[in-house]
Every structure is written in C-alpha cells, then in structure tokens.
Length: 316
Image (cartoon, rainbow, N blue to C red):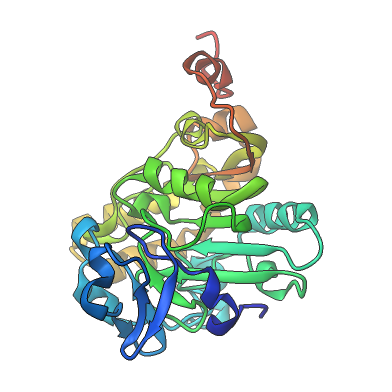
C-alpha cells in the first residue's frame, strides 16, 4: 500500500484551529502559534498509540474518549468468511470504475490523495492503495493501520491547496455539517483537484448516534456545487434498497440484528433487480449516490440545481 509514513507528511500537518505549523514537543506535536490556545504553555496534542490526535475538542462533536479506540484497518468486511462477504457485502463495481477514472486523471509524479474517514479501506477503492504513484494520506476519528493521524473532518489539519485528490466514501452521512466538510475538501484541494464521494440516499440508520443525513442525487450534487461534475449517479438501485429495508423490517419485528442480517443473506438475489431498472428510475430510488468532480471557484446556482434533476419525474 502506498500509505505515506507519518514522518513523510509531518511537515504538512497544521493546527486544526489556527492552521499554523506544528512543532515537536516532549509530549508530541503542538501548535507553533504563540497566541493559539491549543499550543498554550507548551502543551502538545494528545496521542493514541502512534497516532497524533489533531482535534480541537472545544469546537468538535467528537468525544475525546472515542478517539482512544482503534480500528482494525483493511476492508471493513474482511473479517467475514469470503462466501458470506460476497453475499452481505458484494463488490462495489461502481466505486472501482470511478476510482479508476480518478487515478487516470491524477497528475504525475507522486500525486497526493487524502482519504477522509479512512479507518478502513472502502469497498471498491482498493486500487487507490495499490497505485505505486499515489501518496495516500488518511485520517479518521480513530486510529488504524491505514491512517496516519486522528482528526475531525470539519477541521482538516492540512494546509490549503495541499492535495491532488480527496476520497470520501460513506462518510458524509456521519458528520454533523456535511457542507462544512465539503468546504474543507474544497480548501485542501489544489486548483483543479479531484473529489470522489459516495453517500447514502435510501438507507436505514447504520451507525447509531453518529448517523445524521441522507442526500438525493440533486441534493448531493448541490453539496458539491463548487465542483465541476465529471460523473454522477446511483451506486446501487432499488433492489439493493429493498434488501436494506427488509433487513431492518425483520430487525424491528424480531428485535434481532442477527435475524435481519440473515434475511439480507437469504434475499441477496434481490440486488440483481438493480440491473433491470432504467437510470432515471434508479436515481429516484437509489440506495446510495456518487459524485466525481473537479475543484473550481464558480458555484452552481439555485436555478442550475433545479434544472439538474435527471430522475423519472421530469415534467410530471
């Protein structure tokens, strides 16, 4: 994996509050700005194992105790037996195709790619970690073998214009202010930098208290209104959404998550219905949507987003 060593990106890291450079201190990294409260009296940011915790907790929803956990890294579903994994978590071919487009569009040499919410390697994006050209920087609110630091996506501790691409897969539903996180993505990207995002539309709550938001295709596009669209559409359609709904209906009726997962496994074939649904209907009934775009300064207008709608209810 071309995951950069922390030492290789150390000089890139900045204070999450004032964005000043960091300095080495006996307890770890600290803010070098004399007037910044996060660097007062020579204090250092906390660490969890090898991961510096670069979070401004006074302005973050992240609980300091939550950052003490660690994630196992790797694919999120890798702990399941392979046959069961393919049933419950089939390969995300949409992500794989779009990541291939993103990687082909990156500049040479050694483009820098930031993974937001990267404690595990996302489904379909594995090629990001295999491409020998790419320097991968990743963070999450917990440390893992595939991250270099712990941070809050609302205040990314990197300088403006410091990365060539950003990957944010199945993350924006878990942040309190998605628009602010996308603004941070726009800030850290270089001019013309690329973003690839996948976000749920019709999915049940799947992270308890840390699941906040869903987006239609149009809402997702408007979230990335300061980006030129290169590609966008449904990640999975109504067949996949139906499997989600039946899983959670059984959970509610039986009070058993295990029963719901068993239902999902038994009805995995319903996902195959996605391929028979036309794109305009799939957009209105998608389980999740994606956006691949290029950073720009011009912002999409309200009129443009109304005209953008591509679903089956046009003119109806």
